[in-house]
Image 1 (cartoon, rainbow, N blue to C red):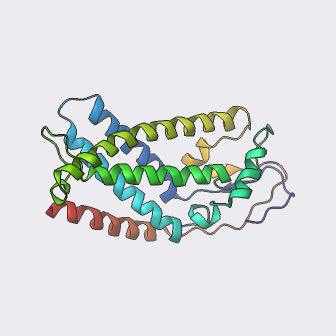
Image 2 (image 1 turned 90 degrees about the vertical axis):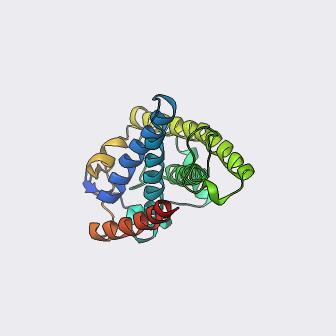
Image 3 (image 1 turned 30 degrees about the vertical axis):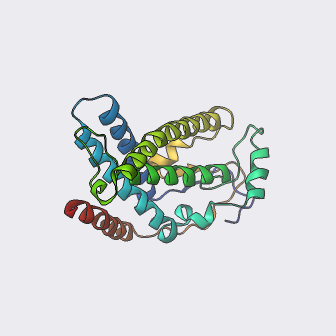
Length: 228
């Protein structure tokens, strides 16, 4: 995305609706998964539902990373190692950077979160708690493999908590040190650019394509589960 230092204080649309609804829906699904497993008795069925929803959301986001709007596409926010390292060196500067969508570190955080959440939801399909609840595809694998995947499923949760803690810490760091509010644009879709940065040309894909892709993913995930 090209940037030039001209008009100050421009407010532009940065995030499309599919990205925003994905972000907050994923947060709700993770909270529901955590609560249903650790804080409520007899809620494991809801834990499974939250896991199915998480898997659908993750797969949709992967597709949207290729077919979605400019700021949603992986190619526009997954930089090289050297670009990421150079950006990391600028974190000590107490002002917003010129990035329009995800910054380099934020882009890699997105990839990490998607990867860990996909692995978490995927292993959950084959997990077995040896009491009353098992994933819908647990019978497809041996008891030994199911137990192994169950252990991975539980361990991944700790990694996810660490990533979420890092994510929240980064949001606070940007808000109070870099003076860059990352939350508001993910709610409204609009961001005020730092003074002197002109608006880039961003392409926003129709929400109907998102509905189509989401529907295809939902069918692809839920149909095998329902007939398992």
